[in-house]
Length: 484
Ligand SMILES: C[S@@+](CC[C@H](N)C(=O)[O-])C[C@H]1O[C@@H](n2cnc3c(N)ncnc32)[C@H](O)[C@@H]1O
Image (tube, rainbow, N blue to C red; front, top):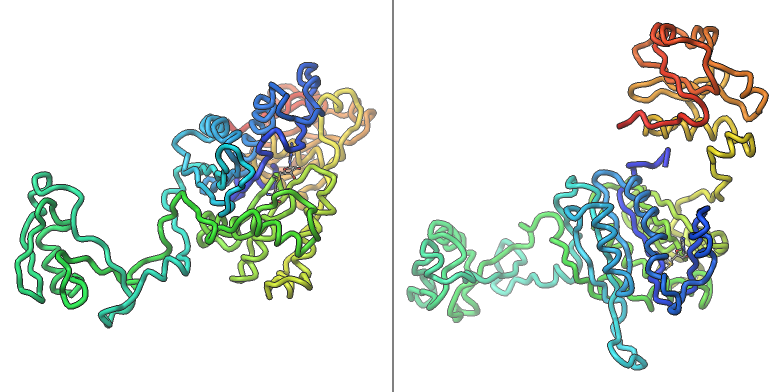
């Protein structure tokens, strides 16, 4: 959070669907006895609280993910009918109804399961929200398929074109100003639609006719004209729709085949296809080649694979952050990423065979910083860890370890403050250290920013604090947000 809050352009997550058949466990680090009762048991169909558990899993995570998302960022959540309705309500609450963009239906397979006794579901949902109204227009890259509707049957010198209807869905009575006669230049007949108006005003029609933009079919045989739209005039991508067919977004079978090729068979259930994630990235990142993409339910690491593949294709420098809580984070999640970076000998895709390039770092979470244990003197965090924590909590701004000067107790400057921390992971030091006049004098000259000093206690009265422009925060209980 201290490093990435507000920085992530695109979040894709694929949390447990809660089908009752997965082996997911609600495993939060919570202390309440009621919650403890809940923990550590596999959530199955028999569990009458399974929806509650799922919501308990998702709510705090979605709140944190929202903090990580940039103002112009978008979050995509892969889900199915087991929880989609709960997820929508939860997302409305956390992100706001106005930020709902779409529930994309993704055709994840194209064959039905004959084992199903009722419906065979062949789609998943991708619930999509923006962080704010800064996302006001979306365009998708044109696919080969969308380009293929452009042809040039009349050899127009302006190149490939497609045509759209000239007839208005509204009737003549509804739009009298768009009702007039137009001339078929082949038969010279004056044409009027029997019931409906035209789409354009008479003046615009005259321009269309002059520019030879009306298509009357081969040898002018159509009853009504159509308007030519040239490929060369279509700017930037196309408007995305919320129905994603398998041929443009991949299938779950493709996802499994991709992973089999890299790590061997049946190593992970239902990995997503990279094609799906690439489509999401293309939509969310438009022209930000340095964007950060986050997936906090990383599984087999498809998201990192897709990011690296896209970088390889266009020379971009997008970065990924993956999070995985299971034992296999190293063996499967990170291993897949290592393999695709280096190259996969038996891959059919040439780029993957050669290696997608790039690099990453692998971290395991350390002990959490718990204020209670600081108070009790158990497990005191290192200077830099506490500095990172208090700096971000107090200022809401990014912490830079390079700025720290422990001798001067200085841990960095935010927009409004110079921040100081008097601390050592040593109880005797903490008992005997205070913000006093000597420390105040050592802060040096006032350079226009107030000085925020964290210390175990203070021996300075308000007049001195005012004189030295100091705001004091007691460690550890008074770490508070200045922002807001
Ligand atoms: C459906 S899989 C994601 C698959 C991934 N999209 C892929 O293509 O391989 C969900 C992942 O979320 C992880 N996960 C993370 N936090 C979890 C939590 N608190 N409870 C259950 N699963 C969690 C699971 O370990 C699992 O690997």
